Image (cartoon, rainbow, N blue to C red; front, side, top):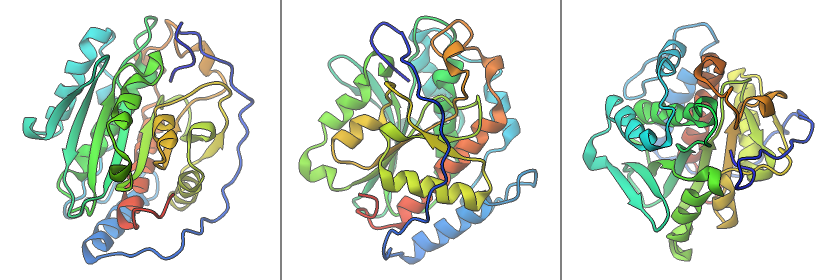
Length: 307
């Protein structure tokens, strides 16, 4: 999660939690496949905390224990991160034919593609780079693990929309990877990009939405789903900070950033204290659950429902 180019994280406004009013999205057209996938996934995701996750048909949920195991080793050097991201996706079932390194002039993004049944697209992503200090465990290996685990959960699901699971490069240098990706999407194509879900810096507390980098309708959706799923939730402005979702919002594509920062985040992020032992795997798991539920809801809706 960048602030400026010299690794100095800008200040954050006092964290102000507020409950989201019920979302009024209007009518949503659901086909039979979308209805089955949405109901199956949401049923699994709304299992009471502490119970065994439901595993039905083609939807497979990761467990808190699996998340904890992912943070036993974290690649702490920038030059090792891209290869580590590729290895993680392969471990979770991605084949090389589905993975593309998206080369741009100044940055490489990794895209893992899951085709849907229509021409619309959802992006779920996290940045894989880190600043020079620390291990970049919270910021943002947590996001990478959540996105990769979301892929593992949905890789066999018959989704309507194509989903792009993206690992963005050089976010810490000014959202370089996400800006490069959206710059390659022309005006006509952008109409078929329904939403972008960004995950950045989970694991210090329960999931929150970064209001100043998120679209209003997706923020409301997150609050409503969190209430249904009984996930403690809040949203707030992080003054001066930014995230990859902003690149999509500026391009007219609805986007949201899910984070898990507590009031002490400035003493951890972008410092030598950003280490794996700082991560609460249960909090990362809750962020993953919320992101999955949002993705399922967007997949079931008309593409313009959250604009």
